[in-house]
Image 1 (tube, rainbow, N blue to C red):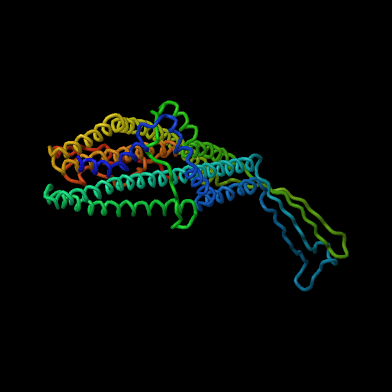
Image 2 (tube, rainbow, N blue to C red; image 1 turned 90 degrees about the vertical axis):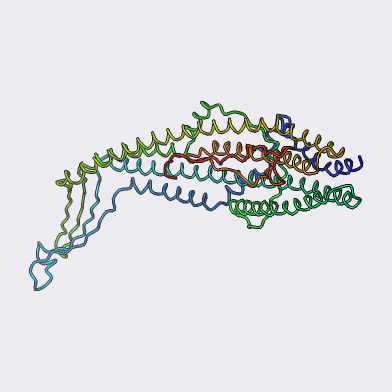
Length: 469
């Protein structure tokens, strides 16, 4: 009984921490991470200081400056001239047909051309504005992915410390039993071996933590080694199935790529109208003054019109070109809409799968694996099972908790992709898990390893997506 009590006391921090982060937290914990001040601050800093977003905003301001340029009149021209009678001397003021000339000419486009050019430039600025929104959504999603990845890694590290607490106490107990002749040397060696194996996983997780910290600090424009304290836990998160039709409507209304494609159709239509208007000639008006020295000055006014004599090779070809571009933009908008629907339905199915996995963990695996561990621990005290069985069942319990963290991170990755309206595959949030086989043959006392849903293959991108904006 004494050994059992010592081992149980050594596990109190493990059990206590598991209860404090119970996966069956009440529904009011649902918004705990959503209202996380750390995450809110990171997103705010990233949107304020990220250079990629600053670049997109600068490009937007540059495109807006093109609108008044497009609707402005062509630059006028000023010409200076001299007309003289004969080559022997300057005859201005002496001969009536000798004079200086100052002429001002102003080109005038055919009515409607300037407004259409302004419309094309304005739609181009609108497309750039949508690109700014895409950059904002992507940066916000990158921050969330890195932050929840950090929560996942730190959650795995906490589970690793739970394992370390048990192994430290188990090693002390097995050594004491071995010294008095009540235990086997293999139990002591196994406990020492597993403590050393634990260090390997810890080093890997600590490396992942540093990588995620560097990514977050880059996104928020901070020093690479700045610390980011976290108090939230992935185990607190709750999810709900996606109302697919509502999400589709919202995605169509907010997708930057779809908005850009639809604006591209409007811009192509305006460009087609402009190409048709370019078949009409442009004008020019001019005025000139011709001083003649002592003689009365002369003046003239003029009007000219361009002759589109090469319309068949130029203007008409331009109309055909813009018509094809309009058709291309229409096809692109349809393609983007189809991909958007596909990705949304894919993520709905992925989220349903992830939620099912989370329910299995919370309602079955975690309860059963914890009960199995406590039962095996009691049997070990009475000598009915070997020490290896205790290690295996503890490992199975902690591996299931690790699997829950992985499943929650996967569900969060899907939710972030939905919010980002990402047309590519769903970027994963992952970290090295605590596999049941790390202690031995598996999580079950009999030695058979139970497959963990968290070890499933990562979400893949099996179809193409439009070129990023």
